[in-house]
Length: 175
Ligand code: FES
Image (cartoon, rainbow, N blue to C red; front, top):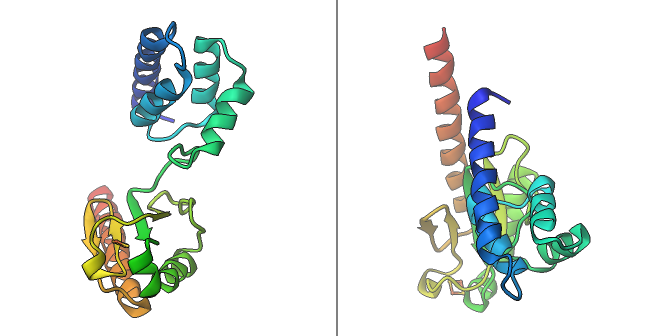
């Protein structure tokens, strides 16, 4: 961990203290605090849950229980590229599961996981309102429609080339 990361993390923890202070004496403070903490950190790792538990004076098990019960909370950091495959009805009947399986196979991760290099994360989502393009997925803010296994493979390779290109450029700059 470098110095910048430490500074950034300690700044975030200061902000978290303020969030806790704002909600502390309100009934049902836990969930709003967890929401804001997730917006701040991007996910809810153990040390963030522990800080929330201590700040609100609630058992850590309660924070962990809420974090794991609600799908909107995530304990694991998301990837640089967040893939969401729609499993709404229109997408499902047009083969969204095969699309999801293809991505999982290609990246060697399951739904809810992030690749070990932190580049991709994979999630399933409900209808995103693009049923006319079913089956669809999003990568960050970009929507991809009328997918099949071949198209998905091509799209993933384009993203991988972007990542590899960045790596190569970094190597060249360092050399
Ligand atoms: S069901 Fe997938 S976009 Fe509507």
